[in-house]
Length: 245
Ligand code: BJW
Image (cartoon, rainbow, N blue to C red):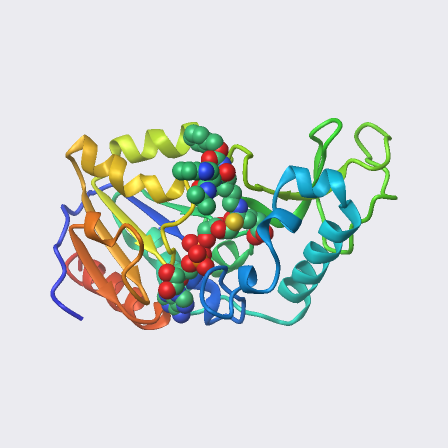
């Protein structure tokens, strides 16, 4: 790995993660050649309109992915664990903002975490917004325990055209952060894809991309390291932490 630019020891760090960080744990990414969007159309499964038109189809897609994520004994990898170690040992605040709906970050030990695109392991009611943990299949027959109405239960994930979660908290953290690190995301989906541009516009804070290959917004980052997440993330974190000890 090239030398890294060392931030101040009390730097506030925001880390954005995407599907690439979970790829080596056994989950597909979205836009790689064999990714999820090469097999199904976004308009058929990942918009509120798709759910309104054909909820059974959308439920089948998410039931299949939830089952895969929750039952195949998939484990957090060295990159997830390195970020948890960074949070535990870094003197300043570390916030992980993940676009991923899997649970690898929390299972690896990260606690200061925002799931901006929701979580596979939760259901939400379209009628009353009640959110509950969910591990099995969902269907249109499920009755919401919050409002007692059927037909509204859906995966608690953010589809295209919907507002990502906790945006106020994310923006506040970006405004104050000294180091922004983007890991395993192609930079195609907004608002996450715009975070690095926001950092640049504010003219403060160092920006780093850690990815398999240059993302769509690669030229906006001040520093970049390319390779597999399980290789470059632990090495980058070790470089950050070694100067602390
Ligand atoms: C590795 C690796 C390894 C591989 N190691 N690396 C026109 C212009 C601008 C915006 C819009 C527009 N038209 C519409 C919009 C808005 C729209 C949008 O961005 N569309 C674009 C496609 C243009 N966005 C929205 O609708 C969002 N909402 C919104 O904008 O609300 C309004 C708003 C306004 C103002 C402020 C705030 C909000 C909602 C987006 C919802 C996205 N939902 C999904 C599905 C979630 C549920 C599910 O899982 O099914 O989220 S789509 C999918 O993409 C998923 C991901 O989180 C997201 C990002 O994908 P990600 O993580 O980047 O994965 P990939 O596959 O793209 O990339 C993987 C990367 O890893 C690659 O670079 C690989 O090289 C790398 N990699 N293996 C390291 N081993």
